[in-house]
Length: 182
Image 1 (spheres, rainbow, N blue to C red):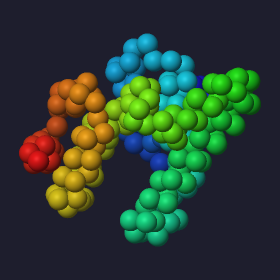
Image 2 (image 1 turned 180 degrees about the vertical axis):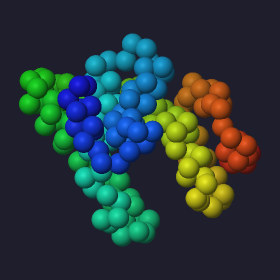
Image 3 (image 1 turned 135 degrees about the vertical axis):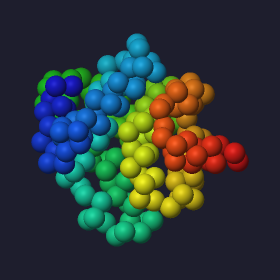
Image 4 (image 1 turned 60 degrees about the vertical axis):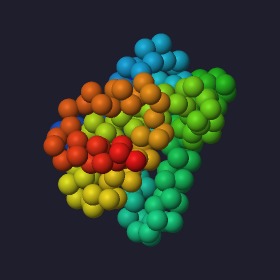
């Protein structure tokens, strides 16, 4: 994890005075451990490397269309899995651990794999807790409601329970209420 943190510490983008991807990795790991206190080492490593060095492939390098966005996301997943695998191999981790971390990075067995579900729940909770307000402030309400519905559908009941405990602002609460009315 320290090596993943060192890589993410190079992120030139800042949030709350910290490298953005380092902060993201810490938040994601914290949610994984809250949802699964006995999380396996590969799951913890996958959480810590889920967005490793993400700034190296900026969104702007792809067409600003839905297909461009989807291609960017697919390429990022491959990049993160390759990067985490290379680091783990360099540090002497066995092939089984490397493969499992990469499977989780790629969401290869989602949603049928329990650890993939925990990781997906944690990803959704990080979005809701730390990114929703900023995105909602600059996005159309209907687009946000659609995104919230999609996130909610991916989440387990345990994650939904945690989500409803988050201290949302008035606008975010309104969007969530509208999204869940379906």
